Every structure is written in C-alpha cells, then in structure tokens.
Amino acid sequence: MIDVVDPRSIDRAAYLGALNRCFPGWGGDAMFDWCYLRGVADLLVVRDNGRMLAGSGVVYRNVRATNETMRVGIICGAWTDSDARRRGLFRDVMEAARALVRRRDATMLLGFVKADNASARGLRDLGWTMIPARYLHRVGAGSQPALGAAKSRTLHGTEHARFVYTDDEWRAQFIDRPRPAQQIVGDGWRAIVEGNRLLDIEGDRDRALEHLGEVFTYSTTSEEWPGFESTPGFLGVAGDDVPTAWDVRNGDRM
Image (cartoon, rainbow, N blue to C red; front, top):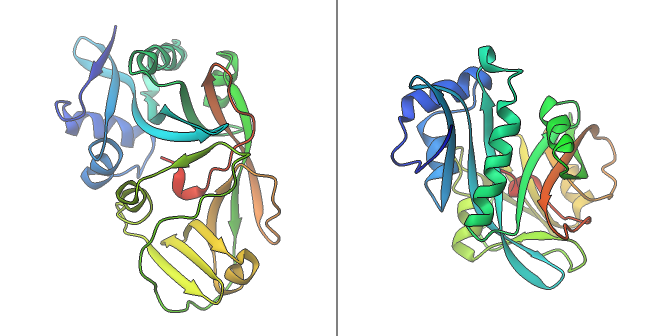
C-alpha cells in the first residue's frame, strides 16, 4: 500500500535516513525544508510492517506553455531501499504519483533523470514523454566581478514550455537555497551560482562564461555550450498534450 503523507507529519529522521542511504549526501533538515516545506508538497511512502521501503516527494509549480499557465507536479527525491529493489516499487510509486497530481488538478508530472539511470528506463516503460536534456560540466579558471542585487529572471521566449514564478517564488527557487546562491554581475550579463552550480545566465552568456571557472549546469535546449562536457539526460513528462520543446535551466530543477 502507498500512503500519501503531509511532509510536516512524516517521521523526518526515518525518511531522511532512507533518502541518504539511496543517495549519499542528499542532505538534511535544510534540504528537506527547501524541497518540501516552502510550498505545496506530498510524500508518497511504501511501508512493510511499519518500515519505509520506497517513496518520493511530489512538489507543485507553474509552467507556461502555448500561452497558458498550468499547474504541474514534479518528482523530487524518488528512492527505493536496496533490499526492496526489483519488486516494481518504483513503477508503483510513479503510477501513484501520476494519479495524485490528477487529483491535485495538475496537468503534468515531471521528473529529471540521467539517460543511463534505471529510472529513465522505468519512466519510458510507463509511457512518459522523454525530452532530451544535458548535464553540462566545465573545468576552468575565471575571475568573479562584484555581486549584484536580486531581481526576477527574464523569461526566455514563448515557443518553449518554461517554469514561471512570482518574485517571491523566484527568489525562493534561485537565491534562498540550502546553500544560498549569489548573483555575479558583469558587463551585459548576470549569472546566478550556488557553489560551482551555475543556476542561470541572463544576457551575454559567452562573456559570462569567460569569468566563471569550474561550473555544472543543465539545459533542455539545443544551444551550444563550447568547452563543456555533456552527460545525456531527460526531462520526463507524463500527461496529455505534452509540449516537446522546453526551456529548463539548472536553477529550475528540484
């Protein structure tokens, strides 16, 4: 049986213990709060005799596509304990999540996966639309100009589906993170970075990259990233009339 649990009422220590066994270094209370307590979220949990065997978070955001704003659910931290694998629990949790977001009046369910991950094969087997994506990594040296003040992200076109935010939502997603992000402002560009994670660039991207050192980022678009190593991935989407063109940046992801 799969239970739908309010994150505020879960046995947090047990849930975090399970997540960190599956994904070492996933995080502690600050990551849990950022993922599950700053907005609407659900936890799906599979138990056997009281013990948690598998689970996933589902968080809710807004996406703009074809000139319409719609509510979507996003898989956040799907896990299965090592001794409970190969029992179809991931499939069961994903199907339960899909049914849950329908009840929450969300039009789509999204998940971010690397192409070589078993979860990618599982989502494809469930009939999800797999939007090509890339995990990008560059090693290099650079200098950092002065930090700038926070402001809302510029939206990128109307032909791609993309996340949309109020000012408060944008700041919570891009700046007030478990490891707070900083904005680096140069001549004609602005970058948002969290450690060596490049969350977004506005303006002249090539000039910005000249000033940034080793960075990791993510893209669902076909734009070139010269000098970056690329690991294939997917934005998996379950729903009706799924857009096939997306503009999702690293800072958009959960």
